[in-house]
Image (cartoon, rainbow, N blue to C red; front, side, top):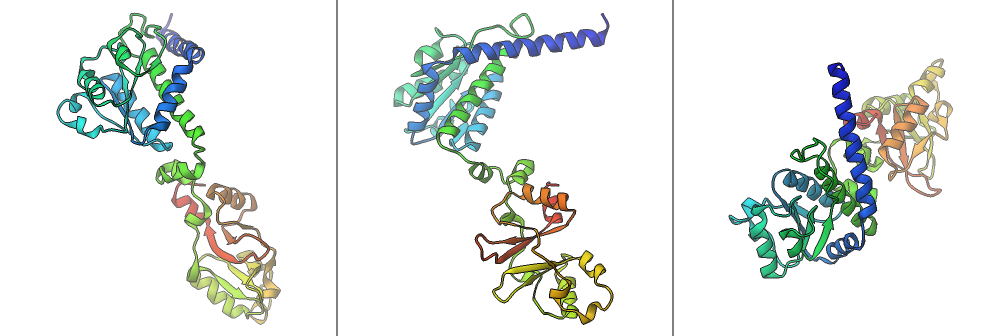
Length: 322
């Protein structure tokens, strides 16, 4: 067997073992999981996650996922907790303590603190008879299926199951709270995810930046408006202030002969493509790509169709869309 074949064989075995363990976890979930969700939902405070070593790393991720999906949570390192950070835990909180063995000595003071002050404790472990699970009010038991290394020493299957249990908790809570994409975006304003959840309203130009001219405006004045505003287009409004048309570079080329003797109504393209302010910016990018245009006028709801803003493709590219 070549090195490449050996590497791939090992990799496939690891993934297969972890996938099989996840199937077992899914089948093993019972009323204890529902109890944990209800306990968190009823808590007026925050969810405190704690664990040491690899469990701690997974705990950091679980805390971050909970916090970003509408369940206030943060991670408290158990060693630091013993040196003052227990003050971060208070009445109304719920502690989720993670230990695969259930016997991590660093968690002792955290467990004692929850028992002393009546703070609800959820234990997440693979050992039902462990100290952690006997002390806990609610038990989240993950299957004890060894580790993918074959000799039970490299946290792999256990950490995968722990991570999956945390994700299951976060998403169950999120769905119960009817957490929507717009809520999710409030916690993710930056990066690619924030960009994907941006609305047209977040990116559009408004007010005096809008390139607008009235119908029957001489094209000489319209050209000045197009040049000054810098979008390469101008919107044409009718007597009611509604967007009646748009003037683009293509319109200018098509009417080049005697252009300055014409009015905006004679040059404009009527019934232009528009978008609403609450649409996702990704939708605007899709429209602009499909129509091969670089700007979209944003109009308000209803029959009034009042222009509220303009969105340029560069605004979308700047935040990582496109």
